[in-house]
Image 1: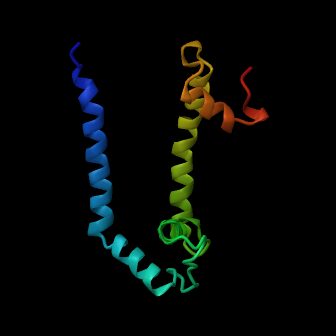
Image 2: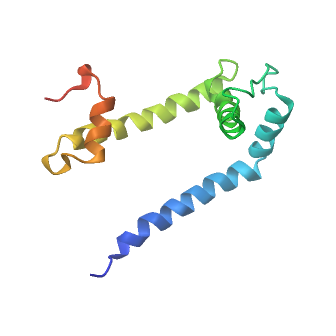
Length: 128
């Protein structure tokens, strides 16, 4: 059975999008700034960055990267970051609603979609 062109199109477009996003992130110096923040142990607003969370170096490095990456968006000292976060959540919410609705389709019973959506859905968003 041969694969349709759309079978290859979505993964290729996904790779292109990831390359474009990381390309901008690297070219504008954000990755270097994030690495400098972790090395110095200081965030963008000069508050200290905690670099030890679990005592396991790979996990601590990942968590320090996540804190440094999300700090400008989550901090109240950067209003533009908050605006970006609100825009992102506004785009993410409809995707989650569709995900939850699709989990109630008969064909999706006993799939990872159904299990994930129902495990993260509270009583207030119950459709049954």
